[in-house]
Length: 254
Image (cartoon, rainbow, N blue to C red):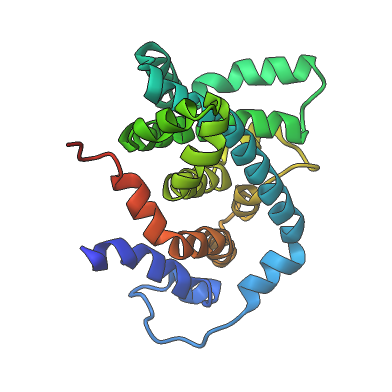
C-alpha cells in the first residue's frame, strides 16, 4: 500500500530532474543524468515567486477568516444542537465547486472584483469554512460542558469561557482544521483559473502554463508540481501528530 501511494510522487520527483527525452523514453529510464533545467524554467522563466506570494496570501486570508467565523459557529452547533445549520454547511461542502463558479463570476464581474484577492479569498472560503466548522463541531462536542459551566457559575460570560477556556483546550482541533483548510485552499485550481488574471494568479496556474496545444513540457510540469507540493508536505509533517489527534477526537464518546 505504501508503494502504491508513494510511487506517483517518487516518479514525479525523479522526472523533475530528467530531460524531456528521458521522460518520454520507452522503456522508462531508471538510470539518468540529473539536471536542474526544469527548476530553472520554473523559477526563472515563470513568475513563480509572484504565484507563491499570491497563493500564500489567499490561503492565509481564507483560512484566517474561516477560523474567525467557523470557530464560533462550530461551538454554537456543538453546544446548542443546531443540526439544521450543520446540515446547511455540510451541503455547501458537498456541492461541487463548479456549481458556484458561474454565480461568483457574474457577481465579481459586476462588482469589478475580478483579478482581486477579495474574489479569491471569498471563493476559497467556500472550501475552508465548512472544513473548519465540521472538524471543530465534533471537537467541541467531545469537550465536557462542565468546563464552561463552572466558569459561568463563577461569573464568566459564555463568550469569556469560550475564548479563555474552550479555545485553549482545542489546540489540536484548531491546528487540524487550519492545516486541512490551508492545503485545500493552496491546491485549488478552478477558482484561480476563472477568477484571477495576471495580478492574482496562484501556484496551480504555474503548472497550467507548461501545457500548450503543441506539446506538454513534462519536465516543467513535474518540477512545478514538486515545488507546489513541498510546502503542503512540510506543513503536514510538522503538524501530523496534531492532525491525527484532532481528527480522532470525538470519534468515541462515553
